[in-house]
Image 1 (cartoon, helix red, strand yellow):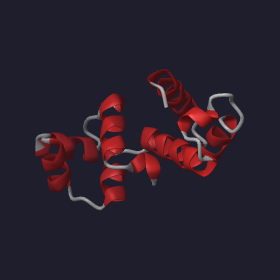
Image 2 (cartoon, one colour):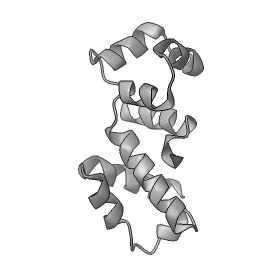
Image 3 (cartoon, one colour):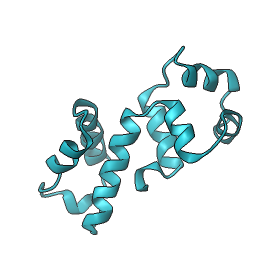
Length: 109
């Protein structure tokens, strides 16, 4: 997937809160094959991106079965920062959350 398509997919995922509607909107574009030549894989990636956009850091940590300590160590982020994100005191920037989700394989789950 090109960076431009990825950016468009993320922006559209932000504006469409319903995962099924989001995926169905991408069912027929000409560039659908650019996400993945395998249609099932493309749908899996679209669902993963949508989930990552809409999940909290707490949800992300729980989805991969890590503790906050392990998550903080994995990404070399101060534990207090992770605790603040997970507790809702601060919000993790979307770009960072997406990078972490991609690193953890959330897009392909």
